[in-house]
Image (cartoon, rainbow, N blue to C red; front, side, top):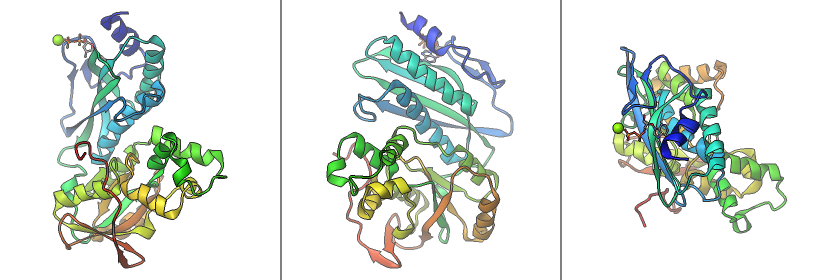
Length: 336
Ligand code: ADP
Ligand code: MG
């Protein structure tokens, strides 16, 4: 099977959601898109390289899911509505079983989110490599940006933290050194592994925060809360006070690991893809009331405040007392 047959067979398919704003899709030198006049386009690219971003043992279905989820998560973190996707795929060989599984899950996710695959590139290389560019729509002039945190804002996170790092530790077989409870039910292990392999992009939450003007500042947690919150502080020139005892953990995580390990995973473990966002003091009461009556699929937790302390730094406190942060910082590709 040659490159063009492969594209036609696996990617130029009926399963691809048809959107009226796609004027020209896969098959020409470029795709052509119509952007509604009152909207702006948010664009993000993420690349996943075998051995670096995913274990060589990952199934093609989980890989397709995760490659899309990480990109959709970036759109969610801006409050954008996902619309279009391009896929650059590097493969060591044409493995039809692999391509069938990969494309099946790929279009399942696209169908669920009504996102259209509009083009891409297919190349041969030594390792599997998946690079996705995702585009979403934003109301003109509005976005959840890293540079919009202000002194006095409350800091929130969605869902639970640390599950993904725990899942990865289990996949890597580190459980013997870290596990708290050797008798923890197998579903707890399965849960955190699933959270690592199939993170949920918080698309509805991002749009909710944007549409209701509850927040102007968010990002998705891909490198660990400490590292990612620091990105907000650097862009917004402010300080954060974090209350460690308020970090949200899943029941499954606490069944498996000691509290100290849960804290380490939550603060420094990457790939939770939960949103971290700020809510101004003036909106906090309305926000708390609104989320109680909303049908958002994920809970949110208040974990601290933005303050005027030392710029770009985080003060960690436990029950009001300052504690030392001695864990290593989040994942940085070029730090070693
Ligand atoms: P060109 O050489 O002009 O860049 P290609 O031969 O690489 O075009 O691709 C032909 C068409 O197939 C283009 O429309 C391109 O966007 C699309 N395409 C290539 N690979 C993929 C892929 N993995 N998924 C979706 N579309 C793809
Ligand atoms: Mg061309």
